[in-house]
Length: 225
Ligand code: DX5
Ligand code: ZN
Image (cartoon, rainbow, N blue to C red; front, side):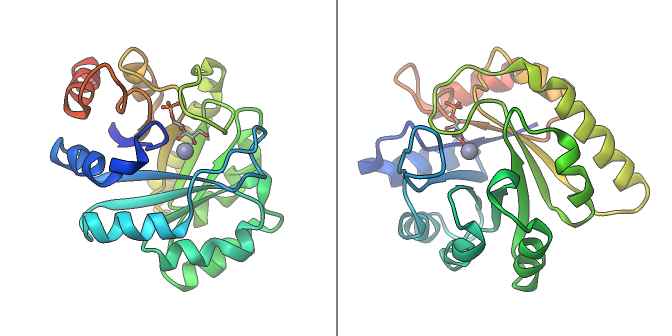
């Protein structure tokens, strides 16, 4: 299982250094959490395309960057994130009226397409889209902030996606990555890896006052062994 950092608990004044520290520690995928002050329940604002552009320019083309859009009107504004240099846009199934059209538009410009669902949204709402997706993201917290507690009740949903993705791949269909986001730490990483997760987003478990990113990542890797 791969690990990708969420930067919500970072000191934004030294974000460049923090991300370079992550890359030096072996990270090759960065997860950017975009909130617009409207869509998440606590009305948080994080950052937008300008900051993502700076991160892309600083890290160069080798690092994969996804943006997790927790915003209204993703249908209208996703292209700003594509122009900011992300490799993949991950949009919420709950926030987009016509997801198949959004997928088609993103594919037209060669953008990787991810679909994310909230803890209380059933897998059935996303499974019909699997043939066209590059990634499914299962939220294991209610989106809105870093540092929340992991919700173990998403296990069955993760396993349902794992089975559906494996079935699609063995029938020669598109390879879809399965990601989880929220509350992942060294103590539960091995459990979600066993559920079949390919990539875990880790925010406060990686970027915190307890240790360096390299130390925190090493602890997660030990737990995964
Ligand atoms: C929640 C975000 C997550 C979160 C991860 O709205 O999408 O990426 O910040 O942070 P931790 O790992 O601290 O739950
Ligand atoms: Zn996220």
